[in-house]
Image (cartoon, rainbow, N blue to C red; front, side, top):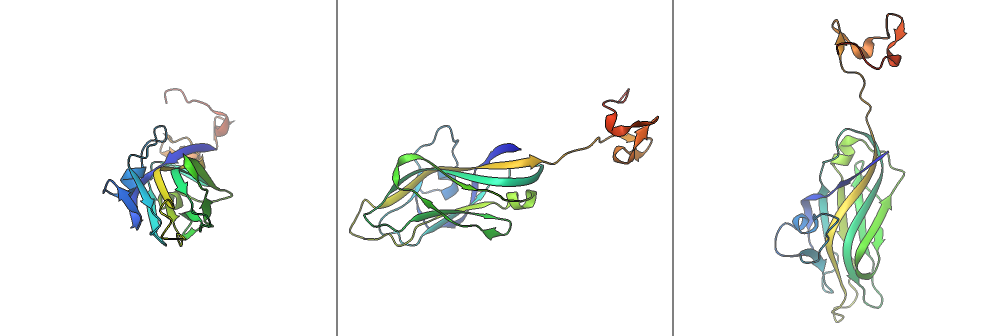
Length: 193
């Protein structure tokens, strides 16, 4: 298995607030090594039932199957005394999976794993991540907020095997069983090729 990262590269739903006022994905697509809260998406105490959804880039190619998606967010999540959870979820294989709670806390990375998946290249290319707020409890509690400064997804996948690509006298190598009685699976190189 191989692991690779994908980042937000497009907005699908943009109900959260953004600072500075640019595309939402642009504020959270920074490199995982240098996360920052200088630009962010956020919701305050008065922002009930808001959703931001992002398309993730298709920089990972040539996969046979992916089996796990682990999403990381760099977040500040301050809760009022009896909060409704903030959620994160992914869209794979044509549907949304079970959303996970974003834990309260100070500025830090949080990760969320969806495992035992079986998706192909087309499904990975359509990967979406959404963040949601629900019923931000009390309009009078002004420190009830969530801010996200960075996001990426770590994909665990297998690479599609590529066989010998040369032809021999017009016959595709995949159709050649043996050469001079030697099984083609045992031939490492062919002189002159």
